[in-house]
Structure formats: C-alpha cells, structure tokens
Length: 267
Length: 325
Image 1: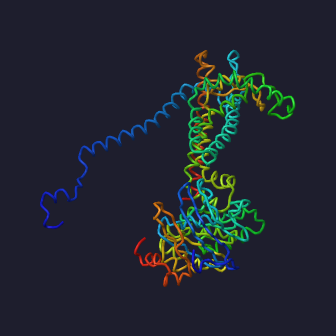
Image 2: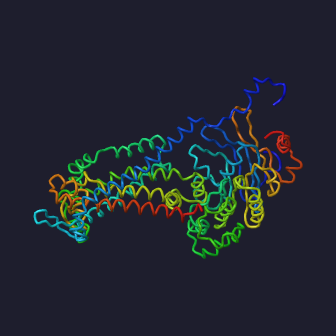
C-alpha cells in the first residue's frame, strides 16, 4: 500500500498484518493488503462480498489453517513474533486472539460452562465463578442470565447467544478479539446491544470487526479498512484499497473506488 | 393488469390457482389412512407377539414363579429349571460387547468424520465397515470357532497363568467361552454403533466445530470436550441399539459361548445366554419344556424391551433437559 497505512511498527500497533498473497489451492483470494491493528481501537473491515475481508480476518488467528488448501504468504507480527513462523502453534495463536463468528455458536452446554470453557482449556487455577461473572458482565449479559447459569446456552435468544459467545471469548482475556460479521444474524435491537458492547470492550481489548454494514463501521470503528475485488486478471482477488481513521475514510476517501463504494455506486 | 391486454393474455397471465381436485383429496386421504393403519399394525404386532408367547408361557410362569429366575440348574431329566446363569450370561456378554464394540465404534466414527483421512478413503472405509453388517451371524460363529478362538487362546491362557488372581482371568480358555463370544458380538454391533455415531457427529454444524477451534482447542480437545458431548444423544442411541442387538443375538453366541450352565466372572469360562438356551433346546423340547422355554423367551423379550424403552426414555429426557426450550 502507498500512503499513511504503511505504519511503522510502533507501540500502538498490536498486530502488524502484511498480507502478500493468500491462496486457496491455485486460487489467489487476497493480495497486497497491509493492515495494522491498533491497540485498544476497533478496526473495521468493509467491502463488497468476496473482497477477502473475512479471509484476512481469519488469517490473523490462523483459523484458515483448518482449510486444507489454504496458503499464506506474508507475515503477521504479534507480540514480537511472526504468527506464520515455523515454530508457532496455531492452537496457541487462537488462545491469544479470540474470535466471535457470524452465526452465534454457543456450545450445547450450560451458560456457565460455555463461559468457563476457555478457562478450563487453559487450565485456569483461580476463581471460576468470579471469572465467569466478570466475563458475562463484560458481555452485558449477566443481568439476563445470572439466575439461570445452569440452563443450556442454546436456550437463549440469538442476540443473547451472540453475547454469550463474546463472554466466552473474553473470559480468558485474549489480547485481541476478532469478530466476523457478528451482527449479521441478529435483529436491529440485538445488533445495537452488541455494538454498544463492542465500544465498551475497547478499553480492555483490541477489536477487529468485519462488517458488510457501512453504518455499523461508522458507528463502532475507529479505523476502517476498505477492501475490494480485482476482477481484471480473470480471477476474483481481494485487496486492500485504503485504510484510514473511520471519519476520514468516510468523509474524504483518497481513492476513487472507495468514493464510489461509499456512495453506493457499486456493491 | 393493463386494459390493453387481450382476453387471451389475461387468461394466461392471471392467477392459475385452483382448489385440489376430488381425486387429489381422495389420494391424500387414502394415503393417510394407509400409513396410519401400518403404524398401528406395528403396535398390534408387538402386542400380539407378547400376548401369544406370554399365553404359552403362562402355565410355566404360574408353576415356577420367580424361582425360575433365581434357579441355577437346568436339568430336564430331574425337571429342575432355572435361568439365572443365562440371565447373567446375557447381561455379561452384552455389557462386554457394549464396552468393546461401543468404544471401537465411537472411535471409528470419530476417525471417519473428523478429517483425519482424505475424503475418498473415508468413503471406502465407511462402506467397508457397513459391510460388516452384511455377514451372516453363522459365518461369524464359524470364524470365531476356527480363527478367533485358536488365535486368542495363547494370550488368554497366559493372562490366566500370570494374572489368575484377578476374577476376570480366573479360568483358562479351553475353547468356546465368554470372551470370544463377546469379541465376535462386538464386531457384529460395530457397524450399528459406528454408523449411528458417524451420523450424529456429522450432523454437528460446522459453526460449533469452528467455535471449538476458535477457542484454541487442539483437535483432541475439540473432539473430546465439544464434539462428542454435542453428539452424545445420537451416540447413546447407537449404543442402545447395539446393546439390544447384543442381548438378542443368537446364532453366533450359541456357537461361541460354550452353552454351559455357569455363573462366573471369568472372561474365559464357558457360559450361556438366554437366546442360545432357547435356540439349542427348542428342537428336542417336550410340550412341558416348551412352556418353560417360552417363559425364558418372555424374560428375554422383557429384558430387550425394557432396555430399549429405558434407552428411549433417557434420550427423550436428555432432549428435554438439554436445552432447545
């Protein structure tokens, strides 16, 4: 990338993500996307479908490694090491970088056990009840579920399930939380609740959110990265068009493509 | 519709909905009646079988009462009949089978559903395991006698010689016995348990798997802590079916279990089961003995029905308490 987003690695950048190429088999899915993720900020990824925003997001915590034909070229620096370095275990990457998915996906176990899952996984030795309560409060769900912690997590409404998943993700206090279109399966009221929650999370966590909803990016994101699809070489390759402070990007985009997308001239 | 359209066009473009014809309604009703009849027929059939067998057994039940269930001798010459060793043998062999076949079946299901293998090999293996169900039980019995027993006898006898103080190894394996029978039964229930567990595991939505890996589980942790518990209801159903099959299996057991009236914890001792007892004694039974065997049949029927009903109850209970309220 050209301009300001060639951020030098400062203390503020918690993940320095430089994607050269991402392949699925022979298919080039994403190219040339440098996306620095700033500490205690919400970074929004926007762009049309197929632009690779989710692919880039899932590369950050190496979820894409679950796809057998996935191949990553580039580097993602996090806490002084390259997440794609040879001695890095994807499992431990995912324990440091939590994820919330598009579809609420609580486990079929009690609300309590859903939140305690990560604690048990990391063999946490402290006070489980306190941690579970803290996480549920952090996810703005405590008041609704405190009297039914033993009920199955699947018994909650969609919006509550998604907040339960957020609670599950923050219970282990990961450094970064990735959210892949976390509100796309929720109604407007639940969406608003989750958005408020995200803004609340900022003080403690760094959040990256993929959204197809530009208003949502404007409402919650401090920085916004706009991705687009390049169909010039016959394929459909996603790439970063520009990244900037959300206000600047929406009011005064540098690139013509961004301008057109934001004004709804193509989607 | 705009006025410029001709009548013809109006007819073509207008709504074409008509109520179902009387023929449609007739077919629908007939179909419904038929299916209802068949559903009730199954119920009637079970009732009829229980009634008929119970009726034949009734004189014996009246005469022998509960003593039949606790007696340990079976001697037609002296007129002494008791089926405690057979009840014990039925449960013991089935539980062993459940333990062996169940754990292997679930392990196979995990192995074949969790991307350990390329897709093609997975499919080949899956159908191969299902083929196990196509082997007739008499063939299993023969294989057990001529291949399996000679194969495991040295191991069994070594276990008896070195660890004979453990009740399970307290006798040597001279030929047919509990363990070879249970081993063959395990292979027989394997396809049932494996197929149903595979279905249960592959029915888990991908998003649940993603959630587990997203939390940073290793593959092992994802399987053990998330996927198996999520699929537990289906897997349990498979185990109940397998257990039911093991309780009622006749031919292979009659050939392998030893048909000896013994009540022993030893894995290598010959034993007997209800089904084997029935199969082997009917051909030469007098009318009186037939009544007694019918009593034993009632007991076996009761056990298998009870196991299946209890299984169903546990499944539906866990369904209710397991969320989705």
